[in-house]
Amino acid sequence: MAAAETAPKAADVKLSGVAAITLAVIVSCELVLMLDSTIMNVALPEIRGGLGFTPAGLSWVTNAFLLAYGGLMLLGGRAGDILGHRRVFLTGLVLFTAASLLGGLAPSAEMLIIARAAQGLGAALAAPSTLALLTTNFQGGLQAKALGIYSSVTAAAMTLGLILGGVITTALSWRWVLFINVPIGLFAVLIAPRYLAESPRRAGRFDVAGALTSMSGLVAVAFALARTPEHGWRDPVALAALTAGIVLLVAFVLIESRTRQPIMPLRLFADRTRAGAFAALLLVPMVTMSMQFFIVQFLQQVLNYSPLQAGSAFLPMAIGMLLTAQNASRAIARFSGKTVALIGLALLAAGVAWLVPISATTGYVVGIAGPLLLTGAGLGLVVVPFNIAIMSTVDPAESGAAAGVLQTAMLTGASLGIAVLSAVYASTVKENSDPAMQPTVHALAEGMGTAFTVSLTFAVAALLITLLAVKKPRAR
Image (cartoon, rainbow, N blue to C red; front, side, top):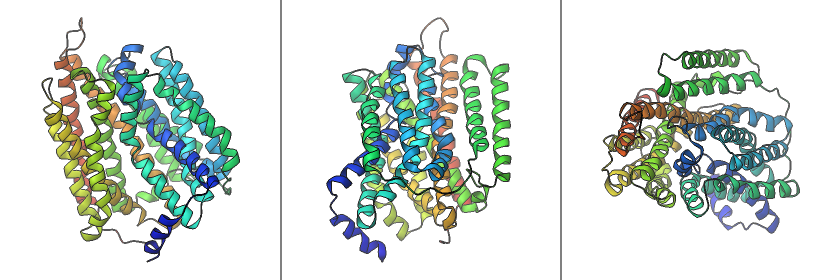
């Protein structure tokens, strides 16, 4: 009843000049941070040609950002609680802005990857504090209105990033995809201390060992996967990296089981439904982010689309997501969260299955737009029920930790999906190419088809986990 009464009040609330500026600073910064997970995808073919990336190495332009972002997000949230969210937000924003400038000026592939990792670190510090600052600076009806605007903008960020990346790359160059962050970041850093109130600080400890072992383990595994297409699975460096990654991830679990204030409390996984939802939210971005990664390259390298055309080609995905996301809550109330999630995952799997037979003769309307529409519709149905399954069964005192693990699982899934499928793609392209010549469009399409086959197994795994592990939660 309270929610129903709040909604109309929030809709009627008008933001004053100061409140509007405060909200604009928070939302614009969150938007820029979220855009960077997808805005570079459209520019990847130009980056590959300009800096000489290999097919497998190109994945690190995206993965360096996602691994640092996801691996350190929980630590960034804890830092905001202890040191003050405005202070940590500004620190992260300064780092993100400086790294964007460095990346735009990068003369080599190695320098761009370093800059992207630094961007991820800055985002991991700044992003967890945006929502905390929003709730600190707005109360009552203003807070509800601000949250609505915040949610709408962030929901559109994924597709907007692809379209904006196409526009900037076409009009200027791929370097301006990074340069565009600099004036926005500088403006926010200068104006935020005047308009953003600091949040209350809490006593606590930093789980630095947990954050470092988790991120280092994921980086080592991703590096091993990226190296194997060129050097093979018997390569001693790849084997050493894979072994080190597994050891570090095991060490992370042991650390979290013994630390008094872990960044990822293992008791969150004690409930079967919650654990199943976390697993599904890890697998879903492995499908969707890698799909974007490969379709962008297919459109530009095989169909010869311009960056602007390639970005705009994802509109069916946005339409599918919009149609289902706005009705997801209504469907959950009528049926159940599990049923809605299963329908969404089935649509997601159908979209990926449609892409498996992709070839150099595949056209956009039938071969790409259809799968994107199905995938978007599926994605719009899966996120809400899994969020409910996690947040409605957790103790209120641990809701912040659960939300942080939820976001980290999705970012980690995105980076691991791109790493795994890029390795599969690069290996297939190498097998179907003459070593003395550039890969043909047929070899590129063959590699993508193989990658989509593996991606389909991820989608089916998420479907089975939801079917077997997730049940209707008993709300706390």
